Image (cartoon, rainbow, N blue to C red; front, side, top):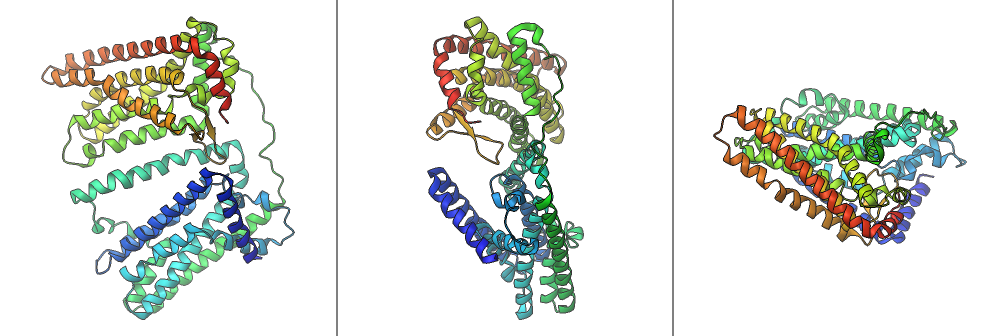
Length: 529
């Protein structure tokens, strides 16, 4: 049965390759990235040979792999059908037989193989002697088996929750720490390593508690066997195997319960009637209230705001951890933050989708179109301005120059206004349909419109950067003026400047949309949300 399910998974992969060009390219990129992870991990672990902190770093690497197996299956719950036990309920199989088959199927594929090959770097970097080499091979196998069992137990236990709307929202929020980790490894780690603040000795204190976790047990078992303590090494491996067996037993029980439990994720919920706020202010107030509610409740919108904050933090890393506390770094983070507000909302027509056709029936002229775009700008600005200002003040505090937070806020005010104005214009002049893939909260460009998405992104980043140049020049020219006068004037003038840019963008967008409303409706209909 295990071999049958492995064959089934391999067949599903082959069928996915034949489905579309996008699936084929995604598979190739995923496999290539898995190969890079395997080679990079093996090389990094092998280079630890002879270093005093090799076991500490190995424990950290093993723990990171376990964390990846814990989080990523939750994100891919809707993509990989084998993760949902509801898809297996009709199979005439015993629970234990099905569990063994699913475990074998989970171990098949590019990523499990990449895990094994990458972690085998401990045979060079940490193991010593014949016994150490044997223990290293066993430890790597048990580590990967523990990761797979942990992932299966968590996804099966949370299947009913993940299948519901709240569960999908929770999976969407996991994109924020994933992006944060990516930015950390691409921005923070290289700069810390270049400045000498991050080395293998930096992980010495972490191992004090990591060594008692299952990944740490595997790493220390290799060290014990290599230093002439085979009894301790075998005891650690036995403890790791016992933990894996317990997790497996809990997974089998959870799987058996999930196979016979009715699905309650599709039950209807109560609808509470409530007056739409700001609706008494006409079309502008109605649009503002509707978009405000969507921004608070739609997980995709919350993910976008979280990623914007992460990007601002990543850009200002050198001002926080480096020796150069120049204000220009924090100003650059404010520019990028405002620019990505525009990037994520520069296609409001396509992101609204088919419902825009109904909205268009109320947009009967240029005046109503101006109200429509200004209502969107008010709702987005109500979130963007406080968020970007809070992040700017937080980064300035971490850089030990709190007053820089006011300068960053001035750039935020002008940048948000420019971004919103560009959003309005690009939504009308460069609209493109989008679609949502199964299991992913992020909307992607419909095939054939990739160039439009790239063009909108570049237009926002470049446009916002050019628009805030007057504010940056004003900050530079008033550097020697008293802060009590300089800061309020900069904030007020930047706010007025940003407001003027947003108003001008809405005005231009309304004039353009009046002539292109049928075309905009066609683009909205092509979106698959």
